[in-house]
Length: 265
Image (cartoon, rainbow, N blue to C red; front, side):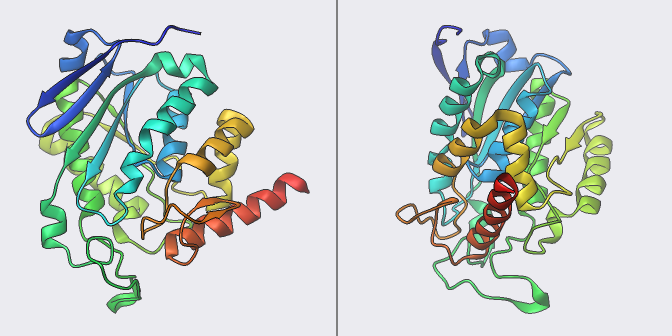
């Protein structure tokens, strides 16, 4: 197993970047087209996407967003997930690079949703739950592309999905494809936006984690990732921690039940 690299902390604007064993020149300018930047919130989907990227790219950096979300505890889960992933596969440990966190509090200022306000979760107008934060994924991917531009990274990986989801329009495949075109035109780059979960339901997402890292990765995601919109970490279920009632918990629980049934059949 590779020795634990030293940790340096670099502050660039409001972003916090933790650099593990990366030379400063690489830290500031990236290390080429075979590196991926993964949108990593600390949730089930993004943890699975991180493993997916580590299995495919020679280097992987992560990016999380602090936008005033009620379930900001998800960001606190990232460290345990990262350390667990390193322990599962030493080769992956050597690929992990900078961990970025960008604060964008303006998003919660302009949003009146159940993810940014202490209000009950319910269905809103147009058939969308009031957990929908307008423009969230559009902003996330735009900020990710701007960061990837500076660091010389071509591949951006996100956990967007329109199979098992709450109907958010910025999770749809057409939206992501259109944004890829806009980002490439606007920045004169050839970014590739990868969405490995787009056509997978939650059971298939659990199965993908099993395929990538076996039972060890599945158990790590169950124990250490966070999905619950209410930020509940007290109640433990077969599928992990959460309130068990919000839409995110219900999707995760249903997917786990189906996946567990497949494993035992």
